[in-house]
Image 1 (cartoon, one colour):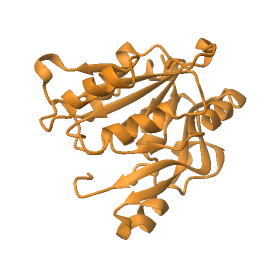
Image 2 (cartoon, helix red, strand yellow):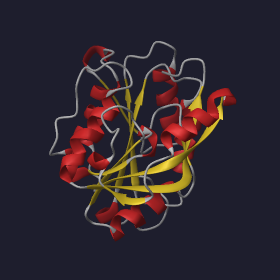
Image 3 (spheres, helix red, strand yellow):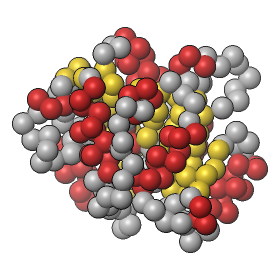
Length: 228
């Protein structure tokens, strides 16, 4: 749990889940963006998915020097099993009322969790909240990513009512906060084609309630040479 010197509200605790594979160039900035949140009640769980670039060692150094409450996990024998199973491992140890997904190369706006949790507390029928994105890094495709991942119906909506929900993914994984109790209702962990595990998860969750889209650019999506 993030130590702030203030009382933590466990009833609103958010578990931030980060699958990490060869993220040495980005993971320090990603973690810094989480620990800079204005929302105080969170834990951070990173699952190293068999990295070979030194990021496993870098994570332990960050824990010892900056983030003593950081939880670092890996699969047995430090296997590389993919992002879906990495997220599932983190979720299996999480204790929060809410689960926030974050990829190891993306960033949170300082008020992201605060605004999303307030919105979800005000809309108890919603099982998932996501936000618009800002693109950093390679800006040559920024307009395409912003259009693709920031164009859902504003406010509360039914995901399965979207005419193209089985044809395109409108939701950036790093923007998502889910009610943890809803994740327990679905079997989302699977060996999947890279990049489709999150879309599969949204489709399963949509059977259990409405989604909520915030049009603010609260998620910073990094596009780079190794992006999927």
